[in-house]
Structures are given as C-alpha cells and as structure tokens.
Image (cartoon, rainbow, N blue to C red):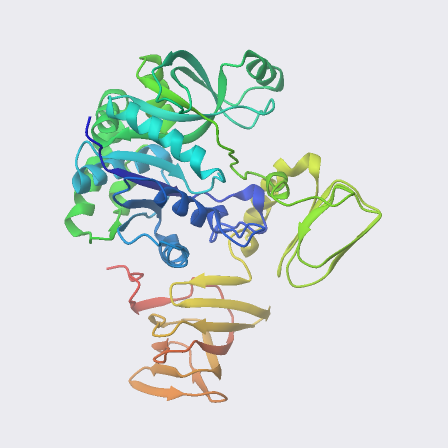
Length: 488
C-alpha cells in the first residue's frame, strides 16, 4: 500500500479554567508557559512536525488566537512552512472542527490523505514511542478504520473517559499493540475506575485520532449527517473567500452547526458498529488538566515542595509555588498550591484543585476582567500592560512590534495621552500624520480618529494615559485594520 500524506490537525481552544490564573480565556492553556518556558501548543506542533511523511499542518482555532498562534509557531525550530489556519468565530465543540478540517484536507491533499487529530494541550515527551504509535495508526487508518489512541492507565482516574479494548488486531513488528474498540465509557465513578484499572483491557481516551479524509467524511455521513450537512455550506463559503494560509469561518453559518463532540457524534456509534481501532500507546501522556499535573512537571525538594521563581520555604511540605515578579515565602504550611501573578493570586489545597474553575465562574459572574485577561495582553501588533487604573483613568504600557500598527479607530468615551518611551511613533490624528521620538507626546481627544504605528525596525514603547467615564476595551470603533478585525 503506497504511503499517503500525513496532515496533523491541531485543535487549539478551550479556556483551561482549572489552570487559572495562568490560563485565561484570552490566553488559554495551550499558550500557558510550562515550567521549562515552552507552551503546550508549541510542543504539540514540534511533535507533529517531527513525524515522517508530514505534508502540511492544519490548526483549527478561534479567530482571536490566530496571531498568538502564529507567534508561537514563528518561535519554533523547524517552524511549519505550509501551515493552514481554520479560524472559528466561536467554539462549537470538536465534531464540527474535525469535519471542517477533513473537508479542508480532502480539498488540499486528496481523499486518501491521513488526518492526525491532536489536541493542542497534551504533553508527550517520548517522541520515538509517539512516532511508533502514529505509524501503527496510519497503517490501520489506510485500511479504512477510524483509529484512536489509548493510554495505559497508571491509576484509577475519574477525570478521564475510557475505551474498552476488544480483539487484538494485526500490528507492525515492534510497534505498540492495537485492538478493536469495544466501546467508549464516560468518566466513571471511583469504584468503576478501579475495576477498569484491574481489568487491564481498558485505556484512557486520549482524544487523539487518525483516519483518512475519505473515511472520516463517510463516517460523518453515516453517524452524524446533521453535522456534515451543516458544515458543508460553512466549508463552501470558507473555500470561496479563503487564502492559501487562512480560512475564516462565517459566524452566521457556523451558528447553525450542532455543538457536539467527535466522540458523541462519530466515535461512539462507530465503535458500536465495530469500525474503530485503538492503538495502545506506550508513550508518556498528560493533559496537564490541573495544577497537580503542572506541579508534577518539576522536581521536588526533600520536603516534597516544587515550583518556579523566587521562593523561600520554611517548615513547608508538599507545596507548589509559582512566583513571577516577587519573592513568595511560605511558613508552616503543607499541601498547598500557590500561584502568584501580576494581578491575581491563587491559594488552594491540593485536595480541591478541581474546584479552581469555580473561581473563574465567580469572576465571570461579577464581570471582573481577571477571568479573561492577564495584566499583560497580547495583540497582533504587540502587547499592552495595565500599570494602574482607577475611577476615570487607566495607565498602560504599550509595546508595538517593528513595522506593526494598531487599527485606525476612535473612542466615544475616553481621551488618550501618549508619551514615547523609546522608538519612533507614527501618529495619525484625524487628517494629521506626524512622528514622535523618545520623550515626546501626543493628545488624542474623544471622538477623534487615530492610529499608532511603528515605522522603525526596533520596538516602540509608549505610556498611554486614558481619561473618561468608561474605559472598557469594547469602547472602540475600527475603520481600518491590517489584521482583519474590521467587520464589513
């Protein structure tokens, strides 16, 4: 059988609420720096691109994460040259994302091209074992099966779904074993999880899949036609106006697509029909789904303490501390997780880490921006950091990348004062265009069209002082934007 091209499909989204305050809605778990300084998204892309026979890379993500994702990829060794982005206006779960990716891969690489579907927020460090599992899976997928990857359980975990393995399938010599998938099982109670662990023929459902474009599209047609029927017009509209690297999903069409996971829509009924195979991976795997999982990525000291940053531990045991901009000292405590960031601090007992997501829910209910934004917020043109805010004012540090520019915009309820710290600023203010250098300033009145740009090859840094009765980020009207953020 000739080798078909392999196209990794990275699904990148989700809020990662159990990893607040490092993971937030505007910069979720895939972008969160791990203790080694790298991101899960970056590690996933490197792992995928390191496989043999890869013909391209498709990333399905939210439109708001597009430039952040591109920045992550640009910083990788062996950055993907043939990277395609499918940009959703909002999430509709994994089934629509996979269906769109399959139609895209079929059009770009042919119906026999193999999709390797990978969540962006998984950590796998054993690349050779992962590559062996993928080789096994692609061989089976070329035979027309839907293939998933199972992880051998190390304990009776209640937070993962399980797959029951049935009859063994022919395997490549020296490769990991493969089985017929009997059924998918939802997250079990503790007693049932213990039974699965003891039985030996159950694996954790990793959420990674492998199949040809033809096979998965046919599976949608058979098991979830309502999803495929709703996705086809979305794909047609995308293909008609997309580019070689970016396909934007029409929000009105996408709203009509069912919100359902690929497991519910396709994999579970297909397993019942006997057409799903599971490759039992021998590689290490973590979904980094809690602060306990992050803690496990660092080495403990003799008292079982772990962490990163400047820490002082006195009479402390079993505690994880993440310190960013200051020293964090602990005295006389045990079994806590302490996450210190510029604008929020989390203190939680290890036994209650799954409840961190409730903090996010409470902040959202209060309308507090800390559920969504960090103090430093990435933008396509650079980043801004809120230095101070209060009634009627907000002070920001704004850094603009070389050659980048903010949108041409105005504000209804605030004025802005810009002071250049370093670099060269090109300022558009209504009909004026002028340049400022370090220690020079400009005033932007309310209801004035304006734009800030960096025409130089070095970063531009300014201090912005906003004054007004409302200072929310949604008080902005864009007229022109090089990053596609103006609604037609």
